[in-house]
Every structure is written in structure tokens, then in C-alpha cells.
Image (cartoon, rainbow over all chains, first blue to last red; front, top):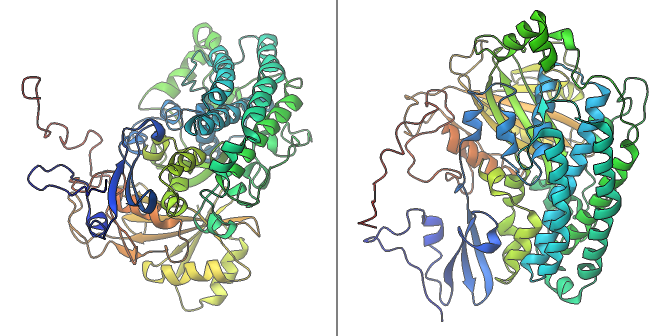
Amino acid sequence: MPYTLKPDEGLDVDAETTPYVDQMVDTGDRWTLNFGPQHPATHTTLRLVLQLDGERVARCTPHIGYLHSGFEKVAEVLDYNQYVTITSRTNYLSPLSNNMAWHHAVEKLFGIDITPRAKVLRTIMAELARMQDHLLCVGAAALDLGAFTGFLYSFNPREKIYDICDYIAGQRFHPDWTRVGGLMQDLPDEDTFKLMVKEFINDDLPTAIGDLEKLVERNRIFMDRTQGVGVISKEDAINWSLSGPLARASGVRRDIRKDEPYLCYADNWDYQGAEAVKFSVPLASDGDVYNRFLVRIEEIKQARAIINQLIDNIPGGSVNAFADSKMTKPPKEDVYGSIEGLIQHFELVMSNRGWKPPVAECYGCNETANGEFGYFIVSDGGNRPWRVKTRPPSFINYSTMSKMIEGHMLADIVAVLGSINVVAAELDR
Amino acid sequence: MTTTPDHPTFARVKESFPDKKFRATEFRGDSTLVVEPGDLHEVMQFLKDDESCKYDFLSDVIGVDYLNYPAKMPGRFGVVYILCSYERDLRFYVKTFLDPSVPTEGIEEDPALVIDSVTDIWAGAEWTEREVFDMFGIRFKGHPDLRRILLWEDYPGHPLRKDYPVKGRGEREMYKVVDRTDA
């Protein structure tokens, strides 16, 4: 039954209906449908205004901002350590990646080189965070298309990653684990940590991925629903600024871990000539939803290979860069046990003291699960940033939504949405 | 902050636009080219098309407000473009400055805060430019669909400007209160 959703001026029902949508309303049999902001398949709060021709999407206009909470304005009143709590809340599927991206940019601004031990621990956790994000994404891809079992297979092992986060940082969901020049704390017990990580990557993960692949990868229904849907060509992917698995599924050879290496992805990470970790970057050429699924599955396997190279070679030493440089917080024993430690602690936490970064601006980015996640920091020389701009991969990837979905069926929207892996908290910030 | 700029693109831009005014800065290996707002589109088109530049990827567009910034800046608002060349594996930053001509507390349209959109060069600039417009009120000439993106259409401010308070201007208090009996 075709119907037209016209804004009723008397009731003031839709303040957001814009002329952009209005002019499309009366075009024959087409009708307008509001998809979201509250809808199970939109995962969080997204709204699409769809112009439908039967069940085919003729025009799609995304409206975002329902979860906008001013993260970037808040950055201007929090110091370089405090803001890490906000970064955990951007992409909450893999909060550790954002913590590291933030402090990667901050350390670039301050000119700090972190210790080999901190680098290895950060790399291991970055890869676990990548798995955490991809596992949810591939599971939700199955769930949105009706395969509930697939979702359970991939969602269960994520709990083990939360256990590891809980163990190292004391919080499951928002670990806020990094600090300027290092980490919040050293591992409580290295052997337990190794055991937990090994148990996860050698037992739980291979089983889960194996089950999921067997269930979904060559499944005729899944393939019919995802192949040839939401295609983006290689040229378009670059021109539309796509990054991460989305771009790599279209054949774009770009991974910041390889192209602008940082942490243990760079050679000489222990300052004694160690080689970078070895891994391959999966590429696909079709650029459709199915290819994105395959790329993500393969990235999980590569992340497992990276962790296997590092987990038995965690170097000793401090997790905080040069303890006497006045840049990192001293260990708690020093704070309570020595006057120097106490002074250094207060120098950093008091609101009229703190860091003395150069008056400059710089951009630092990491390859997170969704793509290039970067922070542009403008510093005025004080202990709070002057301006922080997030480069959120979800936001920029989602801008191609209408391009991907126009011409496809209404039911394909959930498949495409799942493949972009939009996280509204990161999208709206 | 200014050191010897040795990024290969600096020399190439300088020899291609001999009569234009540029400034260059470098910090921790990041090279920034500062262009006049009027020259922006032409220079950006050159950076994308020129064989020895080939910046095919626009990573982000960033607005910055330098009101009362401790260092001397050529203008109040800065717009930074992060470019990337996949082929040559280079990153390059282009920056331009604008000065407002009307009071900046409100959302009044300012004819001085207008620069050319680069959406015709990199389609990916569409949403990032909208965000800069939303947060700073800088308008992009030639943008296909310049609407607010994160805030709603009639929001009474551009919140990332430095003269907008962190606590807001009482927008929450202005909402109509609907209690249980009326709902």
C-alpha cells in the first residue's frame, strides 16, 4: 500500500525534514520511509530517509547526529591523560585501539619514544582489539541476515577479550589503559596474562572462526544476500576517502601498519634492530558486502599470527618512557614512598602545572579495525589541548551509504549497514 | 616551528605557482603548506592532478579556531586538509586562514567565512566539510548539499568556536518540560 509521509505543519512532526527530501515526495508511486533512528538493524541510532520505488531504494538520505555529545569540545577542558576516557567511548567495540590512537598522536606531539615493553603490550592489545571489533562485525553481518547462530559463535569469544581487558586495566568495557608515555600500569602478572592470551588465540578463537566460516562462508543464502550488494569500485573507494577493510575489499592497497608503521609494525622497535612483525594484508577485488566479510575474517587470522610472534617475546623493563623526564606519572610506590615521586605526581595532576608541550599542531593515526583512526591535536603549550579533531573512520565510511544502497532492495540496507560497521558513538562523537 | 622545508611537494608547488604567496611549516616530519583562501581550489586541483604530487586521498578536513591563541596566526579560523598520496606514500597538509567580518557568537551568515569546496576534487570531502560548517560556520562554495550534519538545523550556535562556552548557552533549559500528566 503506497503512502506518502508528508510533514504536517500543524503538528510540527518533523523538524528535520529538509527541502532536499521534500522535493522528492510527489514523484508518482514513490513513497518515503523513515528507517530508524530506533530500529534493531541500525545497531544504535541512525536514521535513513528512504525514497522507495516499490521495494527498491531510489534515494537514500542519511541523517546523523542523534548521539552527538561534543567529545571534541570536551577535549578542550580535559588534560592529555584524562581525555583517554573519552576516546574509549568513541568506538566502544574496540576501545583499546582508540586509547592507543590518542596517545600515539599525543606522544608524537610531545616527541616521546615509548619503551619496547610498552610497544609490545600495546601491539598485542591493539590486535586483540581488532579481533574484538571484527568478531562483532562478522557476527552481526550474519545476525542481520537471519543467521542468529553465527552471531553467537563470534560473540562468545569476545567475552574472553573483555576478561583480558579486565585483567590488565581493571575494566572490561572502557579500559582507558594508555597514558602519556606508556601505560596505566604494568601487567599484574605476566604469566597469567600470557596464559589468558594464549588460551584465547589458540583455543577459543580458532574454534569460533572455524564454526563461523563453516556456517556462513559458503552458505548459499548468505552469498546470495551479500554478493554484488553495496559495491564500491577501487577508484570510488579512494575518491570517497574510504579506509580500512572497506577500502581493502575494493582492492585498495593501503594499511597504515605497513605504510606508516608504528609500534611493533615498524622495524627497530626495540631500538636494537628488531624486525617488524610479519603479517599480510588481505585484499579483495569485488568491493561488495561478501568481500568485506572475507577480508575481516582474514584480518582476524592475521592478528592472531601477530600476537603469536610477540606473546613469548615480551621484553622486560619499564612500561613508562624515561622515568626522570617529568612526562610520565611515577609508579605508585614512588608517590607514596619518596618525596621526588610525590612532587612529580603533583606536577602532572595539578591543574595549574602539568605538561609543557610545544606550541604546535600535529596529526597521528593508527590502523584500527574500521580504518584510519587519527587525532589532530593543536597545542597552545598548556596541559590541555587547544583543539582536538578525531578522524573517525565510521563517519567517513558511512558517507558513502547512499551511494552503496541506491538501486538495491530495502532488505539489503541491513546487509550494507552491517558491512560498513558503523558505530554511532564514533560517527556522532 | 618553521624549519627548512624539504618535502618534495613544496618545491613543486613553488615552481608551478611562481606568483602566488605561500608559507610552509614543518613539525615532527609533518609538512604544512599555508595558502591564501582564494588560491585554495586551484592549488588543491594541482596537488591532485600533477604527476609528481598525485595526492589522490583526502584523509580529513579540520576546522580550528585560534581566538586568543598564544602564537601569532595569520587569521582567526584555520581549515586544515590532510592529503595522502597512495602511489608515492606521502602525507601532506594544506592549511588556509579566514577572518570573520561579523560577530561570531551567533549563526549569522558571514560573507568573509567562505572558501571553495573541494568536493569536486575529492568526493570524500562532502561530510567532513559539512562538519566544519556545522561546528565553525565556515561555508563552502560549490558544496552540493551544505547542511548541518551533527547538530539539528536550527541550532543557535557553532559550538566548536572558542567563544561558545563548554557548558552551552542554556539550550537544554529552553526545552519544553512535559511532565507525566501531560504526556
